[in-house]
Picture 1 (cartoon, rainbow, N blue to C red):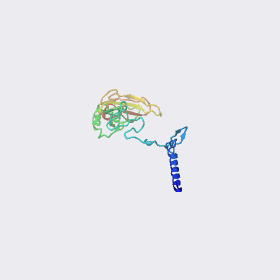
Picture 2: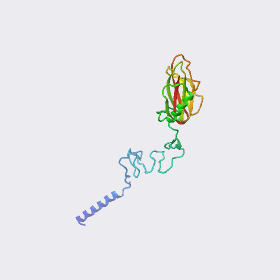
Picture 3: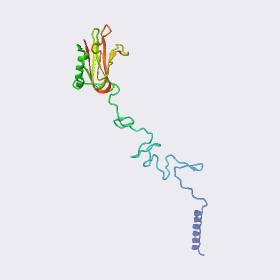
Picture 4: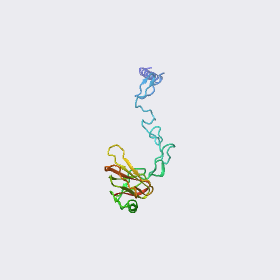
Length: 245
């Protein structure tokens, strides 16, 4: 064998030896791991913010899922859950859709003052009623007129003067039971007023101190007083007038 052939044989032998060393290693290569995951006690630790392949990102919400955990997602057209309170229908009694509400102002409060034109249905009969209930007496103060709902009141002020005699009359139109009361206005703040009396008759046409039973002050000095007109039943207009002589 010449020198050239010997060199070629040596080159081929070196190549085969190198391939055997690279391709026949007994230790398999380490598994590919994310560079952000260190190994602790033989286990790869997940770093904050690391996203597993195939998992949705944090905060991702599946379509159609509840907005808050544990809260039902309302679907269009579906009824509310049993036991949950139902909203009151507009214009209805709370909790009972379609049930009419109590008229505005019912159950108390002040009536709306009106003029004589609005209260004409009550003012006309009131004048005729005064002829029998307050004969020979003059009007003491303005006529009190108002548009009432059941339970509402309206007041008039006057001076309860010794030596004079007083009659209070009222006429309702639509109100079926009118209440009347007279009270002393207590000058001491915080103390309740003192009642002078109430009407004993009932209906849409009532009086206090009518005919020969007019009311006379017991005090020797004049006192501030008021009368209160109340719609005990029904709704409509009431006109009231105080007379004295």
